[in-house]
Structure formats: C-alpha cells, structure tokens
Amino acid sequence: MVDAVIARFSSTPWCNAYITSPNWALANTASRVPKPTSEDSFFAETLGTSRTIRAVLTLRPTKELEDGNALGDMTYGEVVTMMELGDGLNGHPRIAHGGFIATMLDEVMGVLLTLNIEARVKRKRDMGVLGSDEAMNGFTAYLNTSYKKPLPTPGIVLCTAKFERREKNKIYVQGTIEDGQGTVFTIGEGMFVEVNMKNRL
Image (cartoon, rainbow, N blue to C red; front, top):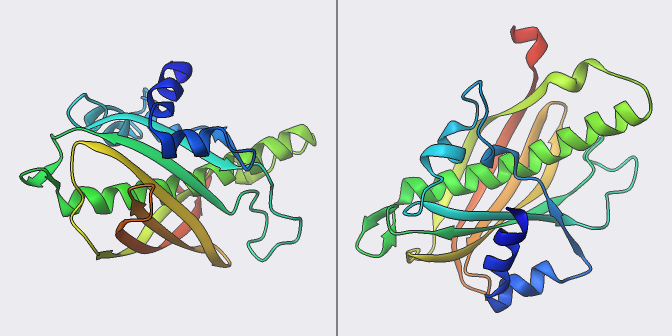
C-alpha cells in the first residue's frame, strides 16, 4: 500500500524531489488509518475517497532536533504532507472549499504533533520507562487561516507544518498549503494544547 502511494506521488517531479531527498524520510500519517474507536474517522474514512483525498504521504526531517531544544522533548521540528485531492471538495467550480482548506492545515499540524508524541513514547519504551505521557494527545485551541489564492482541484498539494514555540502544554505551529513549486495558497497559525488523556477517562 505504501509503495503504491509512493509510486503515485513520485510521478510528480516536485513530489519526487522530496521523496528522494536525503533530508526527508517517510513518516506515519496516523490519522489516515481507520480505528475501531472511530478516532480519526473524518480524515481516514469520510475524506478517504476517490473524490476527496485520494492519497496522502507524510515526510519528516532525517535530522532530529537536538536534546534540550526550546520545544522540550520534541523530536522533529517540521513535517511535509502531500495530498492528492479530488473534485468532491469544492466550494466553487474547480476551487476547494475554504473550510476544507482549514481542515488540511489543522490536520498537518496535528500530524506533526502526533508524530512527536509517538516518538516520545517509543523513546521511553526503548529506555524501559513507561511514563504517564503515553496517553498524551493534542487538541486544537485555535487556528488562524489566511487565504492568499484559490486552491484549484483536482490536483496534488504540499501541506507543511513547523513548530514555532512551546509554552508548557501550549504548542504553537505554523502551516502552509502550497503547490510544491513556490505558490502559497493558504497560511495558518495554530495553537494546540497537549492533554494527558488518562486524566480525562
């Protein structure tokens, strides 16, 4: 399945440049996997059709953040996620709905946060220390979206997310929706709150 997705995106030159770059490595897009709890069902199922988001591929930097960085125990400072969009996401003819574009920004920011939480848990397991943060999750507190240009569909877009700063359990992220060749359609600034889910059960 992953090989098929890689082959699909590799046929687009700018996607292939990311895929073959030594600076980027494949990463898990956890929200694209259906779960029995119904978690992530919106992105994995509702938006997982031939007319919505046809394929998704996430890459993370090959170089991890140094220990003691300003983001605390974060491992990766950014991600890029490629999405192949169908024409079932439109608000105007051949133009993606603005609310959906905000969803993409929220999603790629969440992918970055989730990837770091997974890396933290793996690190603790490898050390034989199973901390209470295994049940950590992030919730969107706000997302400010600025639309620069209409986003045409169908087609492939580049979604980026990068950590800006962290203040205790508040994490600030910047994101963009681009065409992979220099055109920026939308930019976003979000704040996520990291919550220990065990305290919510």
